[in-house]
Amino acid sequence: MHACGTFSINADLDTRYLIVPLRAAQDLLGREGEVSRFEVKAAPGWNQDALAERVEERLQAKLGEAAQGAKTLTRDEKHKFITQTNRAEKWATFAILSFILVVAAFNIMASLTMLLLDKKRDLEVLDAMGMPARMMEEAFGLQGLAINVVGGLTGVGIGALLVLGQAQFGWLKLQASVVPSYPVRLDLIDVLGTLGVVVLVGGLGSSAMVRHLIRRQTTRQANT
Picture 1 (tube, rainbow, N blue to C red):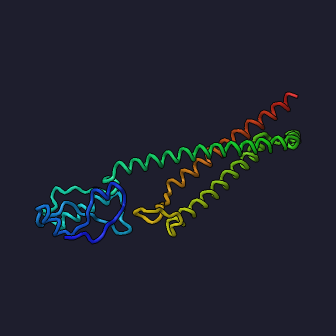
Picture 2: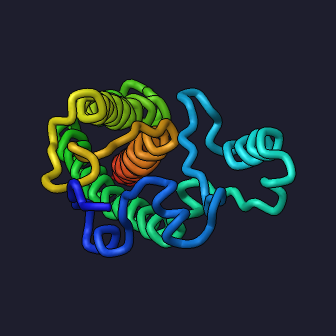
Picture 3: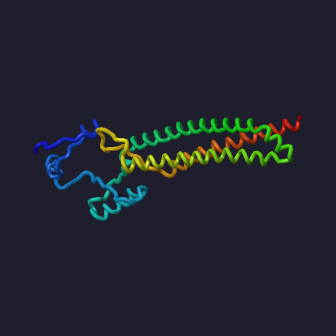
């Protein structure tokens, strides 16, 4: 048997694996008619959560007694350490981005504060005309909430388009890798989580700040 080609994935796999004909490997290892494992790729549309159980049932039905005691592992279970590392990296990235969103929310609060100071005379006129402070709070609070919601939806839309474009066209390439482009996947839970941080932190923070400033302004006017 002669080597007819080489492959390169990474240093770990390159030194551990060889691709040889099945019969040649069985003769070399003295395991005639035996295999140690099967690599199974699920068809599109399979539920990944129930994948291991369904594959195990199918294999046992096909192979009969030969499949008794076989252990079925998903890709995440097989590469458990890498999966845990990727999840930790994902949550760390989400925490960093959430901190950036909190900073952006404070910028919006500062802008609303300047707007309230600019409209100080108008607030005094509205208060003199008998407009309740609650209505003024709702007006400026809704404005802050609208800024956060519109900004959040715009950012989520642009981000989703970039992720879908990368998944479809592979704009960001990877050199000397198993996959030709950087792998991405759009997750609805991640999208909703990011949008929730924007709306909750920015919207509720803006509403609380507006309520505090308007009540402070109306109280000062009442005292004078």
